[in-house]
Image (cartoon, rainbow, N blue to C red):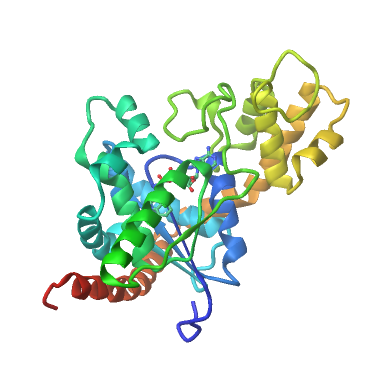
Length: 335
Ligand code: TYM
């Protein structure tokens, strides 16, 4: 970050450390982050406070926080160019979330599809945090006056509510927040399950054949792609509705190799499904292998990870404190 340069637009995104990261997280989000670091002022958060909306084992959560930071770095994020920090290290998130709760309606939160989804999955623990989750996410984004938010398709609705809350607040109190824009790539923004391609690939899926982890072994990745569900035709053609399995594989291959669906169809015209699936698996292995190696090295250097986290905390806190102070003044709190 170059604090003297105010002309650069700010990028903000976050990932929850609530499971090991999948190929979906990689292609939908993480992979796009390093490409932005030279042209934007980028802030990336480890959203551990969001993770608590679902029960977590404390020791595992602590480990996954390090693991996510190591993945941020292993994917190519340079800690000198980006701000990488832990959400709970910056107390302004919780404080702004409270304020924004008072400008968010129960009706709009009730319409969030992720809330409906998660409350049906965790019917025994439909806590208030799960319900107000999008407000904390809005606080994350708005605290940093973020211009762009690179995310996968599933987070689009949350970004929209963040924009609505920001706009509502600005109308009442004057220009306070920057209205953020989503950055959603055409390919890779919605990676589906390998066995049930009508569902999104998710780190919380109980069936491990449905997802590929970023740190998974090449052998295991190849096996999963070889048994990925296709269809009874024998044509590599993009048709989400009628050929969801094959279309998902085309999307994955296209995102990894930076080719359009049409180019992928051409490349595999006349190929058997077996051949195609092997090629997709190999492309994914090739993309993930260097990350896996770097990740292993970083996880053995906790002192370095702690140092990066503590530097991130300082940089993030400075930005967040200024925004919160502005907000407190505007709503009429004595500073
Ligand atoms: P999370 O942790 O579920 O996912 C992290 C990122 O990965 C993307 N993603 C996918 N992209 C394509 N295909 C998939 N199958 C797939 N699964 C996940 C997500 O869209 C996301 O970009 N609420 C957020 C975390 C968050 C956040 C924020 C994001 C908290 N505060 C502020 C942006 C800005 C979440 O749960 O993402």
